[in-house]
Structure formats: C-alpha cells, structure tokens
Image (cartoon, rainbow, N blue to C red; front, side, top):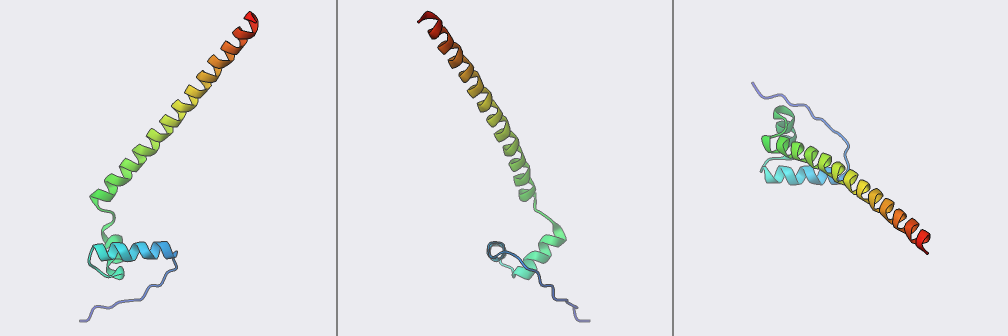
Amino acid sequence: MAIQTARVTFLTSPDFKAWLVEEAGKADVSVSEFIRLRCQYGPSEDELMLLAMAEELKKATQRAGDSLEKGIRDAESVLKELRRRKKVTA
C-alpha cells in the first residue's frame, strides 16, 4: 500500500522561510521532512534547555535593571542631599 500524502500550504515571513531552509539543511532533510519531524517529536533537549536558559536570562536581566534603577535613585538622593548641604553652608 502506498503512503498517502496531503499537501499543506501556509504563509510565512521571508525570514522564517529562510530559517526553515537553513535548519532543514543543517539536518540534511527537506523542509517538509523538517516540519514533519518537528511537529511529530517536538523540541529537542537542547532546545528545551535553551528555552530554560533564555527564561533565566530574562529574569536576571529584569533583576539587574531593577538594581540599576535603585542605584540611580540612591545616587540621585545622595546628590540632592549634597546640594542641599552645599546651599546651607554657602
């Protein structure tokens, strides 16, 4: 019995299409096979690890930003106090 296939067409951006072609080439499969495999088996362990690392990086970046904002507020407060003291002694 012959394998039955059905054509699926979808629209995508040129960048995403280029990515699909590149990734399929790395895996040495056609774009169709690449999509089938990805949909059938889901993301690899490396991809899952990368997603987790990206989430960690996002949280760390947020903490760093919060810390920088606090540092700026503290520095502005110190400068304000120094200016106030300078006016008092002048």
